[in-house]
Length: 72
Image 1 (tube, rainbow, N blue to C red):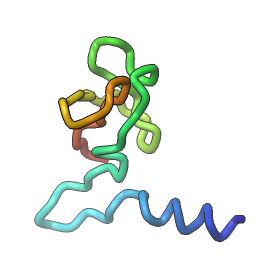
Image 2: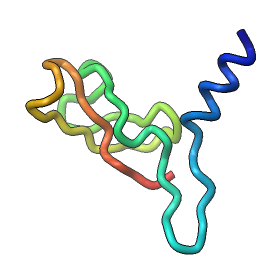
Image 3: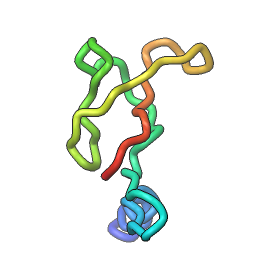
């Protein structure tokens, strides 16, 4: 079980910054339940704990919000 958690974490952890790009949080683009947002288009990122804007588009099922891309 520990190995599965380790592999899952490795797939979502933040990228290392380089000189040409900003470090982006690995949770950018994650789908969250609408209940995770504050009702005003903001949510707390589950990885970096920053307040992040969320969006809802027609392609996404009702009740789901998407975290916008943000820096780590």
